[in-house]
Length: 282
Image (cartoon, rainbow, N blue to C red; front, side, top):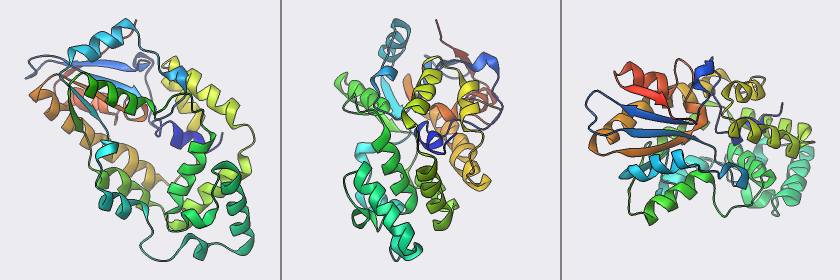
């Protein structure tokens, strides 16, 4: 299974998932919370199939005074974003031979509509994400988590970013430029049937089948230090801040489905802090 699936599902957890956790919507209550908050596993894509909100979801969303997502993507400081995404020195082409440069330039022109020159100052990981985005269905004008942010603001809810940009983007620096380029070229080599694979991923997501999602990504070749930084380390930060935000007001928290399951997942970590986290699924 291609590496692209790993990024597009926001890094579905590599931890063991119990069957009881096959749910995307969870209620957080107990301890010192006056009212329950909710935790929702999202997926950062624009395919209309994931934009399905039943009465249970709507009731949970409407009951909250605030909405929190991993990052308030439209409110990130431009300098922070540049620091995170741009190479500190040199260009991507400094790391490529002529044949590799030609291949990458051709693929970017074909899929993104711009050649390598437009991206040569980016860290390769973010060029990789551009390729991934180009293969996605663009039925909706914005990704699911951003759609919920727009909905929350239209409802007059408070909005919060659970993480700081440096905490999320910093994980990229756990893999070398060469390793990031390997992701790109492996994706190009194996990118033969992206539509079928994405359909499979979306079907698993819609079914809240976390075990199947896990199986789709367990053969990735990303270094363990990246998985540690992007999943486990961030989960601990998320769990702490989700609780802090929820203490102030009932909040609907939307984080990548990757961060929900497993012994080091957000659900388990919030439970360890003494709170009740229970699935809210029909």
